[in-house]
Length: 197
Image 1: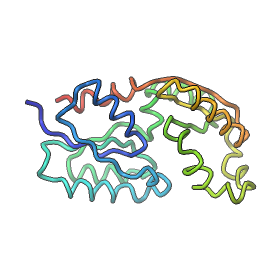
Image 2 (image 1 turned 30 degrees about the vertical axis):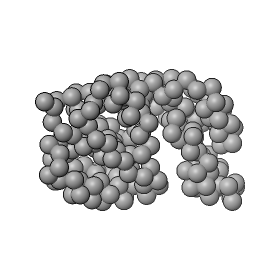
Image 3 (image 1 turned 90 degrees about the vertical axis):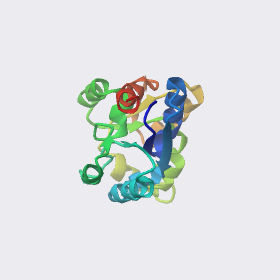
């Protein structure tokens, strides 16, 4: 019988985790997601993950964090080390969505790349436009995005609607549009060894 596992995850990857879990028949795994808005204040991620670990200690044989460093500057790793919890390797979710090799190739090809995922395309208005106040102050766009050259949409699905939205978002930010379809495979490849023990 497999150990009962809790995965503390960023809400931004919830859809992908549900799909991967169903495909792998991970009935022994429970997912609890934290708000994706924490990425706007990454210094709060370690504390939120710590609270979730403490609330669930003793109920599960294993806890895993479906987070990369996510801008915490090593703060998340300190918390996870304290509790003996593993996390997804990498600096941010773009790396595990594309796979490390592909992501590093994209980064080397154009260091000035701004990345979106399916989640970020869907919630661009709330998280980027309103989150950065560019709905009220569009003159902020060059300050935020002036050093970027292109918007790279790292897609998990081949939705034409999301592609159209991403193209509009690139146009709003005055960035070249680049589309790459990766699906769920890179993330599944990382999760499977950690969660099927």
